[in-house]
Picture 1 (cartoon, rainbow, N blue to C red):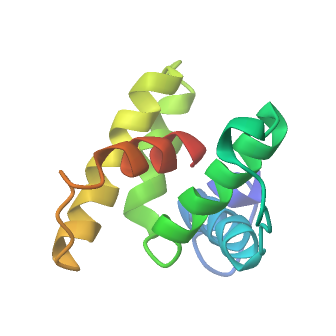
Picture 2 (picture 1 turned 180 degrees about the vertical axis):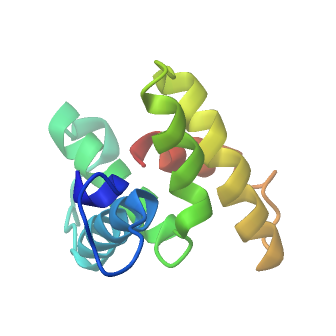
Length: 120
């Protein structure tokens, strides 16, 4: 209850900031992890290895881009039953904005953005 101001606190709480910090921590941990699949042909990867590699690449793409705005809308709409596809779209809008500010052509990395937003 504290995170949503149902309990007394010295200052108002913000659940979105709490979620943001957790997402930042998890993304940073994954982005820092080295996935070593050297010498393994892509067609020989197991489904688990493919998912591991995809998640690592996704984390590397969005590491440093997560802020309150990225998580707020999805957290806010989750209680109303936002679907995975809807949540991914909400996240994608914010991530694309941030990538464009960095001068990245989002059309060139559309598949990577799609995967990264699904990862988040």
